[in-house]
Image (tube, rainbow, N blue to C red; front, top):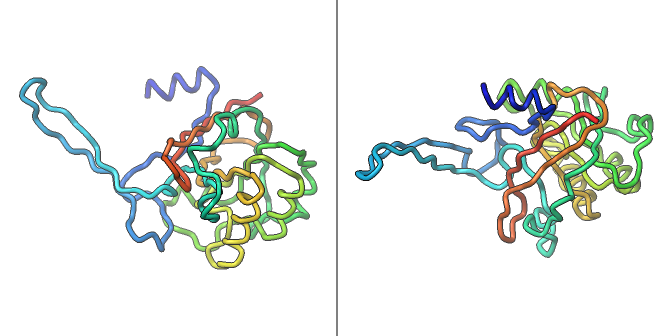
Length: 221
């Protein structure tokens, strides 16, 4: 509770989900995520607790690197420190199917913007049961964002592309990360209003990583 009160006083909003056993994950993951706490007794200090995690680099709130879809692409440890630090904008999407150019055109998106999409997905994630028809970015929407030359795209579910449409899933990722756009997935925007914010998001530094868990926070500006 003390940490939450401190965050409230500072104005920062944590938009990352905690890593935990039973957390929401892609149904086709070969190994489900798990976090186990183990206590042991050390003669010199008494009881100590250490946790063991079984996760892949795309469980929980995470950043996709180009290497995720391009074998020779830039890796997560090569991501510029300020790539997801600075001004950002939360855009609320009304479409409950996908993020399409027609709705994006209403928001006057500018080159270099860091765009975070709040959708009905935010309510899905809280249920901790995978929803197959979550709101994703349409293929046309991905090309629109690429043409607008945004720098970051974030979404409030496990992937920017569709679960049910494999072609869309692959194409949307490739269009974004293949054009220098960093992708932030599984962010918690349930308590965030549309508007302009400052964002700080740093992924774990995994050598040659295709992605990594991240702590992401916002503050209204």
